[in-house]
Length: 415
Image (cartoon, rainbow, N blue to C red; front, side, top):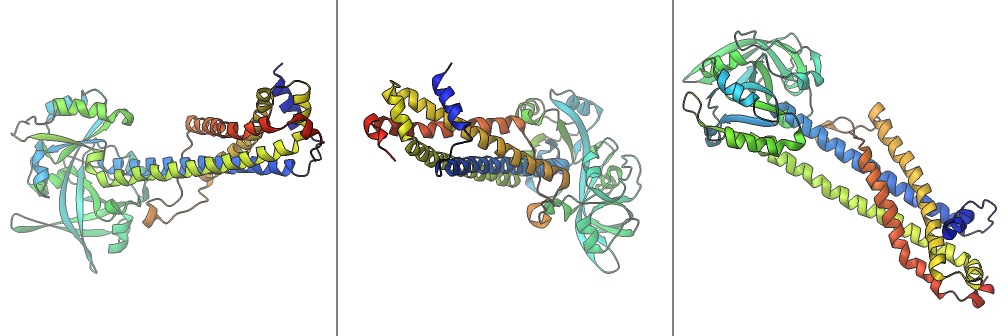
């Protein structure tokens, strides 16, 4: 049997130990490890949940990759591309592509009897994946979007509806200015959505692809662009390379030059902001590991001082310093292990409670979400546990060398 492990286990399991200092020190060290681990689990879960929630909302509005006219870079006016069946088939057959959907955009003004508001109209067709819109629909229903007829139904954000005092079923006039004239359309508010992403909610509404194309003066094959959903977001760069090779700088049937952009290139400021959160995570992880490490060091030193007589006896009967150091390191592992257990219970409990109840709420105007999003990543939690254990044991190696300075004869008289 491993002698250091055996002795450490007997000491740790000795419930009859009446020592007045070491037991509180052990409890404090255990609590320090538990609190540190719980904070790390909650922090990582919140940041992962927040990043993925915001990312999914941005992707919901803009997809993973967009194909559009290269002239789009030169101004705000929409420039069409010819998206016929042959080009759509090319996009669908690119490796890594899961879904493609056409869209067209135009600018207009919504006007009621009391107010008016400039908005962006996004025209979408029947192939458009409305799963994201359904998830965030709070009133009404998703219109049946068409590319062959006008239903004159409008999907508005709650922010736009509140500004114009509109509700589901209301009629609203839309005015479009272009080519020296003003065109008017009368829409019915079919549904209201809310994502809390201000940059989108305050300006974007959804209509038929056919209507927007007519307002732009385009034919049935012309659209502003195509949104592409990839099969694996983690391999977005690989799929993008396929688009760069096959689509970028190619020419459609009407002579337009095509280009592609990923969601990172379309909204770089959003993803740059999300990347800054990683710095906060690392700071918190380092601080919590330091807290756990320092509490373990102080606890180990107190335990060594109170066990001085035992150390002297072990040395007197022939135990080597290395053996005794291993004994106290094993003893520390037991303390850390108990701290990790309770840290997991507390941390995972908070994460699961928030996931099922949403008890922790946030200001959606500031954080873009109404409740703290938490995503549980078990492999990452296991890695945090392992790293905490290894780091705490590693920082205890140096303090354990205090044992080498304990003299057997002097330790017998130590009180």
